Length: 307
Ligand code: ATP
Image (cartoon, rainbow, N blue to C red; front, side, top):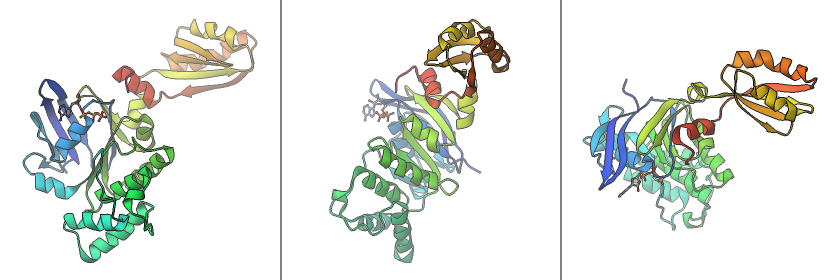
């Protein structure tokens, strides 16, 4: 079975600017895939090529086995797309807009009626008679996702779907994305780490037109990156910090109130020795917990702190 997206050696130049520099990427069918990268990393360029709106300078890409450059129509029938700056007709209602989008895709009759009804429901816009021109950004973006689903695509691609939204708007759009899990493959670009953490099962990190990491979320957080342990004491953390920092397993420690956080090279060794170190100072141990590195830790390590 062909993957939803397969990108090989994809390159794109605009004059002297290298937007994509040999991108390799595979998006398995059924995944909710986060395409994460700082501004200017090349995310929009990659999505434009995948949707047939731009041509690569080198390499190529396939969507469910169809060449995105030479089989554009086959690809269009399989995808739904929400661009980073979507256009709407402000005088239409949500229902009119979805019907219009459906007709452009050749959907009509009963199928269109049913789709419009279920998508309005999904977008929380059922019964909204207001015209799109008066919608909040969140409502517009939910309508945009619904519009991208009107042709019942196998693959939904979204370019920065949450960037312009407030926390509630982001939550609503992320819930729409999460509800598609298992039904539609979703590939969305973003620079917002928490969005990826909330809904994606797989992630690729793009930087300067190159994929610097591609992995399952769980693996990315676990693999090869610093583990942290947090040790909280009733009091006396200032005395504890240098003792922990001097242990052979401690890479670095920092104190925040009565909590000492250490990056550790050997977690079992740390677990064995921490209670004894605490006891040697006659301090009361409140808790000792492992702290998984956040996606932000991983991202900063790979992309060098720019986001
Ligand atoms: P953002 O989050 O800021 O939209 P992005 O990751 O989507 O960033 P792209 O928009 O793909 O990045 O841009 C990648 C690089 O290519 C940038 O340096 C950008 O300035 C350049 N670029 C993109 N489109 C064009 C174009 N049409 N002409 C010239 N340069 C371009």
